[in-house]
Length: 226
Image (tube, rainbow, N blue to C red; front, top):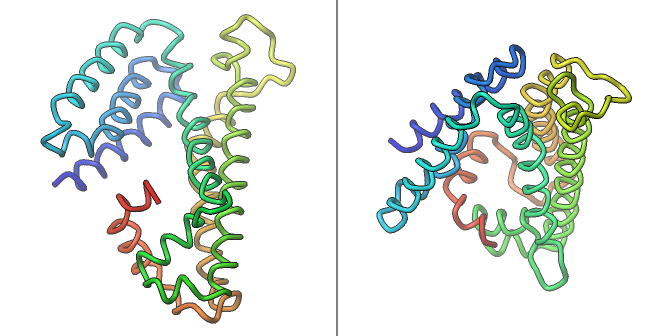
């Protein structure tokens, strides 16, 4: 039930964010941000211990959006997820590369394929390097989104501060990146890695996208705190 509702919220977020980016509509932007807030809080809403606090946080977020819907703040808020989310994910990947810690993707292999598979030297090297590559890719995605958000006109960060953009970027270009290519690039990277894994890591079981997706969903809670 909650997974289906989460999928619905994600679709609303993507479609509304794309429409708001194209039209500049503050109301549609508020709808997109409301769906995103509900999506982030959905796990807490599903747990009895945190349900009340999460509901109050969601209500406060929706009230804030209602108050800001007529201001330029909605445009600023709409541009933040495409910057902050990749940077947050990059930090999650990168922090597991510290000495004495297990790389995030190595940890995923341990959960999905067992400790024996994760302990193979070739698997440990490969997953450590792959974790580093994902951290760099996500960092790059966040930085690109930040630059595009700053240069965008008329609702870019520089424009909202009253500063002329040195390279005025049409809203459609910004929108094509944050609501299109920003999703396509990591998906393409994942598909490419799965396709090349058989050759790059013959020690591992043959990759299967559906099996990978089920394992990722099944071990999501353990991955959030490796």
